[in-house]
Length: 250
Image (tube, rainbow, N blue to C red; front, side, top):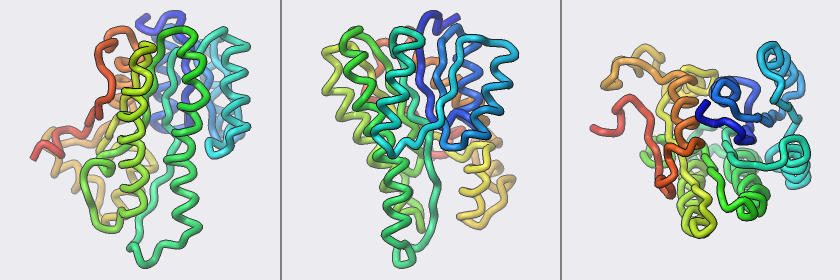
């Protein structure tokens, strides 16, 4: 029970990495408020979690909307009394040649990947400051560190998450709030499939090019998030945690 009595907010929690993290947090004793833009997917995941756990709440949530964030944080505090962990997991993937991007697509991806992360941090920090404790984990990507063709928009959004995390880590360190970003390589999710399609390769080919000879799994990422949320990582802040099977070590 590494997260006993902690309360966590997890965005994009209905599927993939988010759903796996919700389950891992509940297994480790946390109270979990998870959110998603899809009411149907969120309610389906909630029903699955309710079979084993009572300390879980789902809220429909557009991370681009400040009023939605205020509602999520207020409901978390009202139900569980505190907010100890924020996992900004919700995100969009996009790939295109820079000359073919529309301003509308730029705003759509930046709205979820950057504005959504900013708003989450803005609205949990006051509660964490009162507690003098907290852990914020922001989902970036290997694309926030390494360059790829046709990833100008996505890379910009994930690079922004990386630097926002570092800047806030310095800003709130005096209140014992930790802020870190995680940078997965290609993971076995629908987004991972989209990444493979975007670079015109099969996922099996990608796996063969990874030193560990496999793609990452949602469980791999969830295990890292549990560690960063737990008291085992209380001296880790302002870092980017790469989790890519060794791909970027070359």
